[in-house]
Figure (cartoon, helix red, strand yellow):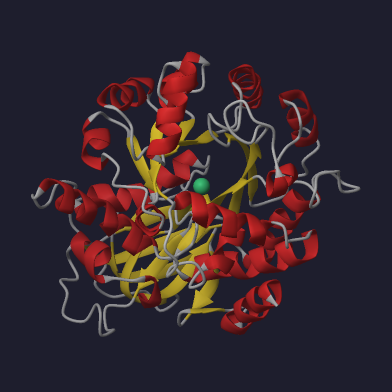
Length: 442
Ligand SMILES: [Zn+2]
């Protein structure tokens, strides 16, 4: 049994507790005791505010190489996508794995203890197959293990280049040809400790209706989470309505995809009817506000989703920013810009989105500091220029003052992987990121 004493800790309620003694056995909490004024001598002291590990529910890890390289070009989501495709075509299993390892480590030091990788970069440039058709997925599994982050590998079905068009260019790397071929490849995926598998439908434009039914059935049989990009861009909604007569979420629901293990990613342009449909189905919605603002997608209906009973969660998606606090507060701050009102979603609601609800969307029994759960936690310093003077008993301090740079300690399954804000196994993380990314562009 290892003991940790948190000066302040958020245990899921509206206030932050003081003097919380955490007892961990194996990878789980065995007891959580607030109001312990004097830490026992054997306990490791956690100075600052301790929170559950955060879940980064939606990631395309290689997009990290686009940071600071696309932001000042005039265009739209669709012109950005061409640059992203150019990058996608430069990656091979080795370079992909090395980049992923560094980016997963960046996520860990930011306070994420789990990531959902929405993985569609399956095959060699131009199509064809690697000797092991899951070589790219395996590179992700190894990278996550090396970085120490939990991974839910959301293997993504991507079959068409658009409504009624074949895959072209970089898209040839994404496609298995048919849903049966996707399922055959996925059934050979190798798992390991700290890794879970899930399924994803890239979008209604990339997966024809009949194939949606097949992927849904496969995920159902396996008991996997199922994720899909939904209504990120107005153009895809308009095309979907023109071709199929219904907006994207309604199409997914018609084919059985919308159920309690389903997470809609983005949902930026959902109709009121679709919001209600998600809520009644007990499904979730992953908002990625820093990416949505970077790409000019729009502002999603966060408050309506929350009020409809949809479990919200967060993802850093294209990694323009990797900061769970920024992602969580952006949900509320965007809603303020949209509505002209303040405090539409409470700090507690936002922090649950970043932690417990995200973990549930990825199939992990983590995201809250309570006996029996996986012992993933993060301590944020309260003595940095950003956090100093903020109320240590307020949940708003975590959501509205903290940044990824204030994360001091990260523990995954009872094992400390970050100390003093540094990844203990990758203290040279910045140079690793620099090396891998500059190599890709040279
Ligand atoms: Zn995405």
